[in-house]
Length: 484
Image (cartoon, rainbow, N blue to C red; front, side, top):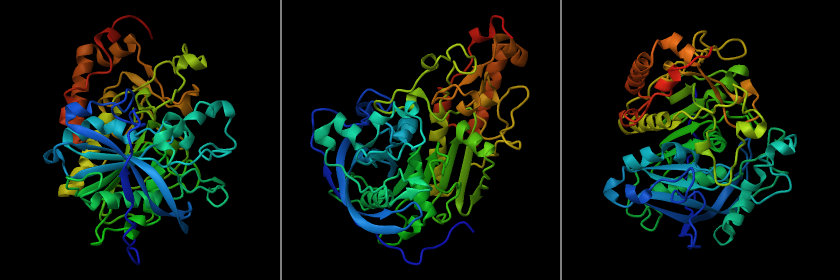
């Protein structure tokens, strides 16, 4: 049995929230600033506001021991429909990632969220700059982490806008909080802050940040490294521990993605010990994480409807794209590492993973709202120490079959296979000759691609709205010319 009930539920403390005074520039991670998180909020009928969130939250070790309560002050960035009638009753919450305060799930689903009338709240979990930042292991090579040092912790935020972010603070003590054998890189108060934020939003406080909107549901949608916070939250039974005053759940669904839990230290798990009875738990692994599981022989959970558990492996999607980087984050390209002529390194793949992220979020929403179960997907096939690749296409067998994998025009690889020295994963496009051998003509390729697209829509992995804009990866010109 995955879940267990708490001996005694409790209501978390209500945090304090006040607007952040304007400083003359847009907030860090704002959707109104040029960058990866930008979208025209005004055209969508949305507004964005930033608030300080403060209170008292427990400091919890990676093993789940609560040591004491301590004060904190952080910030939340709220995006909401201006017209209450456009609001669908659901708020998405996510911690910003360490690297440039990136809203990873916002980047992947923002068009869907605005189209469907969600509200969104991103929030900061970070620390003052320590002598040894726990986000980097003592064994890391200086040259590999140098580009990140200036875009993590509160020092980065204060350099960006001192008047706005100087009040922020969390408890941090490297001597008392470890994860495995290293200092815990996650803020010890993270779990309590997440619970308090959900309580604030779901309480429909007339003076709260979503005043005028009727909040019925709160979903976690947390991608990249800070997804570990929510795995800890569930694994330690916080879902059962912290509840609304009427005993109902603070959080109605959990989606996490692009994170190999336990990889940054601590226990390697894929299913929380204390699975919720009243909320879905969904994990989404790109090719990088699913191959990590295969190479390390990490067993995968079975999809179940009670508890509500889904685990998706999605070959042909990368861990990181240029479209995903945060403020101030600059990742080397092949030319920067002398790999521009290496056929395994010179083509990044940035196929639109946002369409499957949006479709799965939509499926999770339906599971909560009307009880329609999300689709169950086969796992990627494994050998003894790797994934199994199709002899004809060169790509992984199994998993969620998106059109560019079901009707491929390239071999999709990950950095651990190519050793290109990049944060990005790469692909090897098929030559014109190989494309013709596989499909005969562009018309045949396009027909297979469109059929695969229709199948993905029918299975629930692409929404019809997004399918209308999804083009083939290869072009007619790719079928001309020579090459082996």
